Image (cartoon, rainbow, N blue to C red):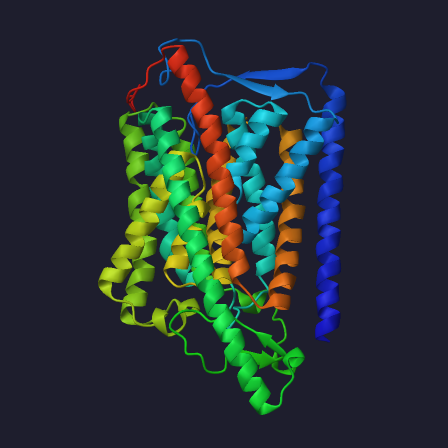
Length: 478
């Protein structure tokens, strides 16, 4: 019965993906046949949320008064579309596995290869991140924790961090306006190199632990007369003992349904925070910057986000809830630990908003440092990122910040890539028994993003110096 249910699930999943791809391609072909011009140029009227800084943004990077012009290349089949799709596919596959989304790969690809301006590339990148994150979350809804009888998504951990992440991103976006582009570029390179290095070292440490565990397991199995072919190695979260860290194939639990694998209360609170903050952000976009309504709508985010996180933190402190994915280490959380976690969530959001990213690049390595298993870290970071990326996509859509054919096309590419990446990596980890593979993918993705985004940023910085543009701080209210 479990096998039949699994096959039914896969057939339904393949059918949904095929239907989405055909619908996207239909819209792409229809739009391409209707438009005769070689590019679109749309005048931007309103600045929005989650956006990378560009050199000719009005009122910020230079003193010219001309409006910012979006460049939307005509969509036609050619080498640019093919190469962009290939790069986007691998970026989404690795990004979804590592739990970082892949925005650091998408933005340079859309800018340098497809030919979009920086802001449109950022908006389209969010569409791809949302597609990959949504597909990954959908894939993970039936997956279980690698060692414990729990969902692979830690909903209590997500509820503790997600509201703070959203609040931090709002603050980071304001810093994005104030900071000069060269400052953001330097900060991006430093942070990404540090995070990729820490992730790589964490991967090496995990690899060594897995090697020791495999040797110990093999010795015990030999003494018990059990063949290694009948055993699957499962990595342990920090704080859990090394007893019974292997299991035979006959003892594996069957997959559970989606309804049984979701913590509905925590999910409901996260969705409620998402809806309220999104409404406040949309309303803020229709106010004058630094006006009284602007600040009121900004400040209203604080009680919403802090209230949700405080609700979860109080439950964790009193013992009514636990971060179960950490094993025994997640059951006794002290006040200073919870405060530190909340501060880390805000900092992650600030860095993500400042650099124009959704926060996954920060949460993934952060969760690993907290002792969360790699599979759970990736799944939970992607779960949180799905909300932040979808929030910005809705805003971009309302403000007409990206062409729909390209958005649907790359959205479909990201969905397929995420599903393929998750499926392949899950099979590989099951074969080799090393979850550290996820950490190495995370480190490589962050490092490549640092090179690509840093290279683009340095090139733009050199051009600004050549044109003698303003290189200092800017006013938020101008």
